[in-house]
Amino acid sequence: MRSAQTLARSPDDLSDLEDEFAFSVVEGLSKARKTLPCRYFYDARGSELFEEITRLPEYYPTRTEAGILETHAAEIVEGIEERGLLVEFGSGSSLKTEILLDRIAARVAYVPIDVSDAALADAKARLAQRYPHLDVRPIVADFSDPVTLPDDLAARRKTGFFPGSTIGNLPPQDARRLLAVFGRVLGAGSRLIIGIDLKKAPRTLVRAYNDAAGVTAAFNLNLLERINRELGGTFDGGAFRHEAIYDPREGRIEMHLVSEREQEVDLCGRRFHFRDGESIHTENSYKYSVEQFRELARASGWQPQRVWTDVANQFSVHELVWM
Ligand code: AVJ
Image (cartoon, rainbow, N blue to C red; front, side, top):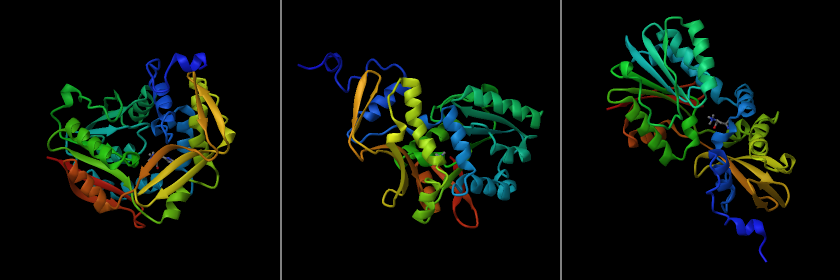
């Protein structure tokens, strides 16, 4: 006899899961190769841990990109004219944006786009202190949503800003589609300033995602704790270990959570089985050469213009134009 629980629902019937997080988790853990979407790393605890990651000695991207923006700020903002519009996709705390706004706050309006209402409110309050005359118009949305810009600002010359190598989380095909969405949101004649991490020695990459202090491990494992907290999951965090590997063929860092024994985990009225050594693939972080990224931009309809890198060639900031 089959148990009542099995009879109640077939394993791939997700119709009871109205919550987006619950749906994604059940869907990802039901696959032959288990996955969880990396966008769910960023609950309150996860965001704190990510902030901590950005300050780690091994995690070079954040400080390297900030250095590039500082060093070349005058050139980067050259294309932003009087009464321009700066649109940031996934703006979060808007901290890096200040490097640009310090030079252009008097001549632009700023549209930060982020899923977090709270982050936008915090950023707006801080920016109002620092730039009392800056017109800030937050939009609550996912950065991949084809948003409509405020009517009274729509005629302005626009510069998009997408720092942080966030686009590296997407496989190239999806990255191309996202760039095309940005093009359509911003419109003809617009520019995009976008940061992307560069290919480099695998051991440097692996260290950046497997730091000695274990902060990235805690960041990765927090996803299981979040599932326990929010979905009533029964994950034993101590029975999974963090793993970061570089796949040179795909040109990407992969993060995994590897089951250290055979075990069962219950959540949302389902039971998931883990073999000893079975992994949950939690994140991809694609790395590009400067030329590969320019080619990706071209394929999505953007025209690559100037590129800025640091002296060690670790990270790149690209200027693209949408025709
Ligand atoms: C925020 C997506 C750019 O891929 O480097 C950092 C996220 N994951 N350490 C990255 C991350 C593990 C980060 N991004």
